[in-house]
Length: 386
Image 1 (cartoon, rainbow, N blue to C red):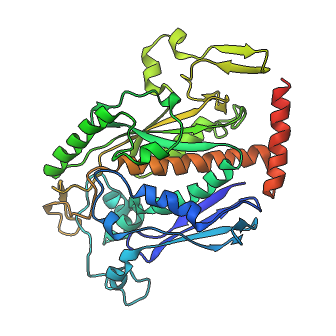
Image 2 (image 1 turned 30 degrees about the horizontal axis):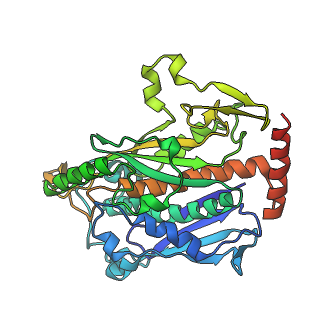
Image 3 (image 1 turned 180 degrees about the vertical axis):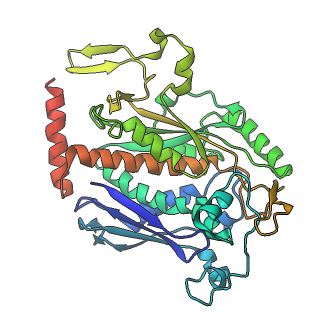
């Protein structure tokens, strides 16, 4: 079973992940992971930290000679800003906890509820782990999952489909691959819409404000049969939704038509089924379901839409209340972005990849890559005989 967890704080020494269940024999090098770490730092509207951090992973266990061993894979991403924070964030008893304290919770963050829940007087103890900086190492885990899925012809990519009120005019089912999108400022396939999106971000930045949007993650090459209808927690759409909503600042998830399906008749909401006798396969001419029916992949591209709220830390802070004095103040300001939706898409790719890797190994099992491959080939042969 593909399992993983992360550890680390935003301004701590670094971020760590442990990944278990990776089959032995999978080709894996740090460069495979660094590609996505760099992509996470791209995108119009990013803030100052992207100029400080140039993330690179260190694989500290589970890989030898660029192949996985079947044992836990440990990943470590150093924080290059650590030298400026070591005295404040040190785990030692002499940490200077009286510096850079946070007592004015920022609206929209975990600061206040987290501080109350865990009994912290300094809300920095909440901010540091709640920060979206944690997604760096999620992307590293997702890159491992992508590497596994790529062995079987599965590709995962994302595009920005909305910034603020501006929507791209694009058929996401016709898209294939990341390379071209990574060259554009917002990773949006609609150049006209992207230009208006950039103007919208600029206007918000001048006001000291932030903007949100929607990104769409697509997985191609999936077979029929990942996930299951038999229980609430085996349905793949439920697992995907949970994974996406676990990303900081995400507020909504839909599959395929999503909420748009609520406003149309059933005759326009579903995908009719056909059979190609020459190729001996079932197929569909539309993909309104977004690749999932009954919580199970149906062989069509998997299309996941994720809504990201505007970032909560503003250049012009909102009003708040000091947790010590109870006096009103403007919320404290931390370093922030004006828009991080393109980066959100990269994190979304990672989370979709880990959910699919989990489902893949549940379905096909195997301690080594060659064993998984045999199981996949046997299953696909049985599907061709249906």
